Amino acid sequence: MSTLSALHGSPAGLLPQPYLLFLGDTTEPGYAKTAYGLRDWAGDMCLGEWSCGATVSTGLPMLTPEEARTRGAHGLVIGVANAGGFIPDSWIAALVEALEAGLDIVSGMHMRLADIPRLAVAAERLGRRLIDVRTPPRGIRIASGNKRSGKRLLTVGTDCALGKKYTALALARAFAMRGVDVDFRASGQTGILIAGSGIPMDATVVDFSAGAAEMLSPAAHAQHWDVIEGQGSLFHPAYAGVSLALLHGSQPDVFVACHEPGRTHVLGHPEFALPTIQQVIELTVQLGQRTNPAIRCAGVSLNTGHLDADAAQELLARTATQLGMPAADPMRGGESFDRLIDAALNEQAGA
Image (cartoon, rainbow, N blue to C red):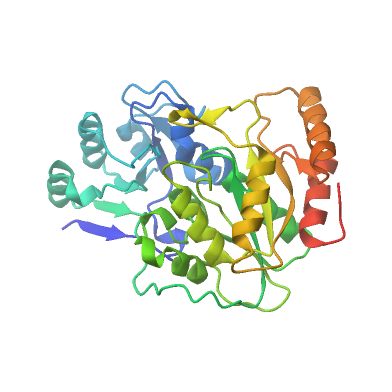
């Protein structure tokens, strides 16, 4: 008999690892962020990729489900996070093929796997699991707004899919390397797949979203840090509500503003221009002061993957000078990233 299940707050070991990453028929790299995130932060769990017409690639070996199963894969992860989180009809045959090859299916989409009749029937027939990680825990309460002990850092952004998760993961890792007691707190499906626990903020009932953020980063001892993965943007025409709930509920002492240089319009909404980094900083402080009057910006994280090393360093230096605070690309590291870490941990640190 199949198991139709949801994962929230469960250890990563309960997931069917290692994975084959499924890219569907995706053509927009920003929508393949789940696959990229797993490749970059949980690469030892990923054996290869598979698609049904995608033009994007993680660079991992292209394997059919049968080939992946032969090499030891136990799960097919839908590596796509498209607008609306839906599973199109054009993917269903490929997903059934994965079940028939002996793989469970793991999804972070809004659409529930078990609600798709062909998948539910196939899973039942084959004894395979359909696992939805974008499922909030039960018992979420309305936010209290009360200050909690411990320290918190939240990543915010000018848009979606530009580095908030990567920045949070890199900062949490850097904090730990400095001997800081720290936890990475995942707030989206990819982060949950990487960390093995978390709360999918965009799947919570709106009245309870800030309460979910409080639950995500509970009270801790005074020197403990929670580095919280941000979602959306306060300026996003569709997702600003998720961003605001996460800001109010997480009550960050510190935030890092994330941006992708060269991006001028909201992903998937070309009619909306992106805000400036300064606008994001100012609005985050203004709104964040509601639940933490002492909120401050430690600096800026720039996604410079499309630039060569010299151009990236010049841009980082210029941005730091313009804004009067550290600017770094966490994936490049270096002295600029060290300054950003210093600024996050030490209120006296500067650019």
